[in-house]
Length: 142
Image (cartoon, rainbow, N blue to C red):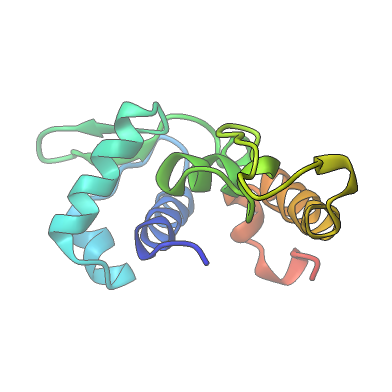
């Protein structure tokens, strides 16, 4: 399962994508619209800002905005940033690979082979689904 923090991050980013290119939204607005606790949202947006996904502006027309087009930000990128590796086993992780301590041989591990298929399918969906895609729910293939 993804963490609540990752779910909030994705919902906040979709809200920013919905606002439109170059448009900013205030934290309070996003918090209220998406039912995300404001203090938690502040932490999440700061993390997304450090990663170069959003930018903040001060002043009357301030708030947060996407730094890149919604078509360029994938669910996979955001999940890895917030939750870390997208892999059910450490031996399947792209960014945090570790050999399983109880496994004698990865090539003949039945469990690994099954979960490798799950991981590859999950990555494929997450790495090709963008914020822009999620704005058009009816077009998202199941």
